[in-house]
Image 1 (cartoon, one colour):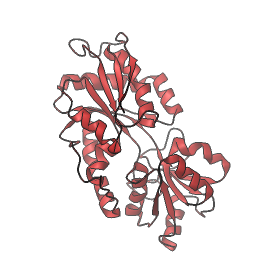
Image 2 (tube, rainbow, N blue to C red):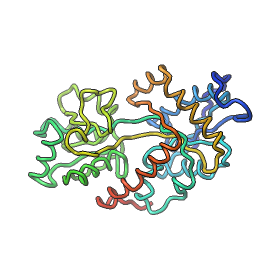
Image 3 (cartoon, rainbow, N blue to C red):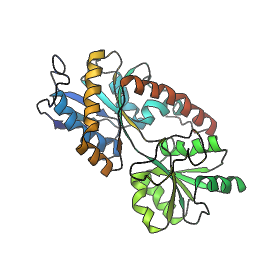
Image 4 (tube, rainbow, N blue to C red):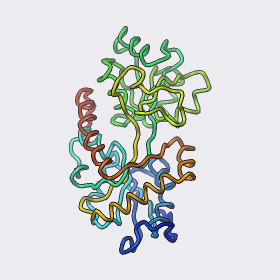
Length: 319
């Protein structure tokens, strides 16, 4: 079901995107259902994006097939800058290898505009696990290979593949237990039915003070802004480890460079706004920015990285 919400139709607040573009509303496709983290991010960013571009920005939810339906709609839209999409690791990177076939090529059929935000993924354990850091968890697993089970929000999610990445890089044999969403995964982790979790920080945060779970590390390249005292997995001994639930904006391929530049500049401005940063951090999402070239290279680098993890772990699914 497609839900369309008008989010902004205000006069331009800056000189960005003056001239012939844009002259009509811009559609921002969100490839997941309303209410999730991707949708929440879109509805915070879109009003200010509209102010800078001087046109209405519409959030269009097109959920299904792990994000593929919405991103395919972006790829097949007219390359005029009036249809853009908010992508994430699944439909832009992971699904290339995870699924049998995609109806689009994320490198050839999409034009990267900007990375805009990051959702930290954390490694947590039940309090019964005798490990207070990543090194001791790895040692515990290697002492009894295959006896530790890790929860994720589902097969093929960033959280699932974050656990498989640790298995590949550290030589562990953590066993995956997929759940239908983060909430169910946390419930079983709190109850001790699974011992380990790779979950998003905002979902885990409220449960850390209860003494039932311990956070060992964050998967991001840098420490999380909302948990600066928690080390990264990379600095905990697994060099080169990096994972996160990032978000980026894309357009159809062949959108004119001048339009991509206008969209990028507007998004960079929006993500630097103190009020936007504050609102995003309040929901556990960390704002960032990039050039189109940096985002494009990031996508090209991430595809083979996760392909190796998927192929090694046997995580490929058929749809």
